[in-house]
Length: 437
Image (cartoon, rainbow, N blue to C red; front, side, top):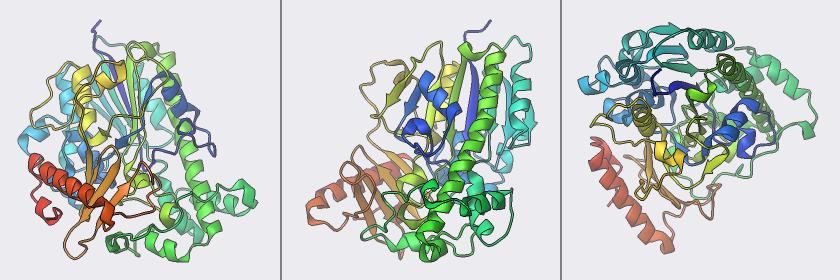
């Protein structure tokens, strides 16, 4: 039997880092996610590379910053006809197949043609992204084999929160109307409270409003203007219930893993593609630099190696850059030279990590964001030239923009410099639009 672990990669869609009981949210029940945290390590400072579905998923599948590939939005990402040969040849499925794994992709894909499972090294592709996915994944896991397995289980929820505004208007999509009607009938004290950062931040950049499409399925800017406090609390209640729904599906999958006798020798990685604003700053949906949009859950469990009950509050992690190098590490493959991420394995084992990154970066067509240990800096392009500087140590709810504050001009200059350095290091061809002097 090989020494390499089996690997189960579980992903949800549009789940921010605080949407778990183990992260301190007592308004919902997430026993499956909590069990992973209880038996493994939860990394609290995990960020996506782009808070939009397609670019984030392409990033995790390739280990690349998505804008370098031309994927800054959902349409641009889906329309990619080709990837650079080195990137295509070293995408997640291809790497794991070459490493000697039986490979399975189940559920939501939402990536360009070269990264569709049938083109990207997966032996099998199961398309259902909801209730049928756990059983299909378990069936693959339980087969007798002489090599380890690599299985992706990509669930769609809590992404159905995108249809809550439609439900408010009487339109039913994915049965969200029933949830909306149930929430409307509840007394006030049964709805989640408004978040503590419900207010609009002081000196919020105009680019935030400009980036929000009033014609979108979730018209966040319209909702910001029109929703009452109770409307927002109803929206939050639906988001909590959809998260519980996907947790239940994950629970079935983890129980199947246990029954197959594979639990001890399987690395489980759990994350999401991006977050959801969840009424913070009177916004919902994603695509913004605020914590609820870019901050995501990340939990790793591997009983044979990772000690239970760990919480890493120190290290900044980029899921888009770091997950693929981590898989290479466990699969005993050399990390390809073009990948700028690093393996998370040393963080999980208590090994001494003397040199870790000083910042993580997120990006899309509107902004470049750089998060250091204490501060978050964000720069916008072209006519939306304002900047954001947040002190997350003293204002973790992101209610004050310090970019124009006299006492923080040195910090601002330092972060401008870091973004310029990253632009060169990562070959950001559009970086000059965001680098301020």
